[in-house]
Each structure stands twice: as C-alpha cells, then as structure tokens.
Image (cartoon, rainbow, N blue to C red; front, side, top):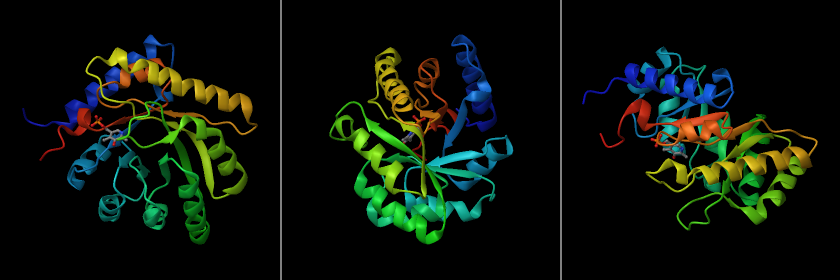
Length: 230
Ligand SMILES: *Cc1c(COP(=O)(O)O)cnc(C)c1O
C-alpha cells in the first residue's frame, strides 16, 4: 500500500474526534503528538504542513540531527529512555521530556537546564507493568520523585504523567493500565497544591481507549507515518 500521510492523518483526527465525543470530551482537549522516530525529515515536514506542530522522538542523537533541519516553531517531545550522559543534548533540543523516571536523571537534567537557563516541561513515566524490558519509575518510588521534582528542580516544570503499557492486540486489555495512570493523576492533584494537567497515554493501536480513559496527549507514530522499517 502506498503511504499517504494526508489520508492517515485525516483518519487519526476523525477517530480522535469520535473517541472524544463518545467520552463526553472536546477533541480540542486532546493533543496529537506525531512520533517521528526513524522517519525522514521529509515525512515530518509533510505532517507539519498538514497542521501537526508537535512531534516526538525517542533517541536524543537522532532528534538532535533532525531538529535543526525543520521549522523552528515545532514543539519537540522526548518519549524514549533518557540516559544521564545525554541530558545536556536533551535539554538543548526538547521543550518537553515525557520519559522522566528517576531522581538521578532529574538531578542531572536540572543542572543542565539551569546552565542553559532554560525551563523544561517534564512528565513522569510510570512503570505500571513491572516488566523488565520497560522503563519508567516503579510505583513505590513515584511520590519520592514528585517531592524531589517539586522541591529541588526549579528548571523542571512537572506537567503530567506518561505510561507505555505492554502491547496487546486486544486493546481492552490495555484499559486497566490507562485507568491506573488516571488514578495516579487524580491522586497527585489531590495531594499537592501544584496541579498537573497532562495524561500522555495511547499509541497507534490503542489511543481511542486511552482517550476514553482521559488521555490529553496521544503519541501516534505508525498510524500517521506507516511502518518504521523503511
Ligand atoms: C514509538 C513510540 C510511540 C508510537 O508508537 P506507534 O505504535 O507507532 O504509534 C509512542 N510512544 C513511545 C514512547 C514510543 O516509543
């Protein structure tokens, strides 16, 4: 099948709107973040011309090579695991880091952001499945990380939570993970005077379920850009 980013994006926008209506929400309250990892800058430019202004990458080096070639008003999100030796490059290139998963990481990222005199929006990635292959902070360490971020990291602005559940072909099996992330979100907003507003959950396969459970950000790669194995 021939790739048409135009057709794909049209379908995604329609499905987002339908899922929003189904759950009594406004489609404007759900942000489509186009995950462009492995794809060429020509694809990104095409989606940009169709009105997508927020893109995500999962590797710092790949993103740092692509970002300077693209329009400067794009908002770049990092969604992949961030190693402490890459925090400086990450702080230089991204305005939002969704994959915050340890105190060690935010300590380093805070120092680099301070040095760049830059404030970065961050989301905490929660490990809800406890799988060895997945990243994210273990649930029992979540509030420790929240306290640390709020008290010790003036250059990091906590705006929300993210999760990357295991893959299921039956998307109903993913729903409990989204419900669980939503619970942490509500609990956070009850516990702290600082409020968060973003729930980043749902990918190509399951974003409609995620929207039904309250997602404000959906991270969509394949459904917009096609398969990643060019
Ligand atoms: C690749 C990736 C996505 C997008 O996945 P698709 O299934 O292609 O939509 C979303 N989130 C993260 C963290 C990813 O690494």
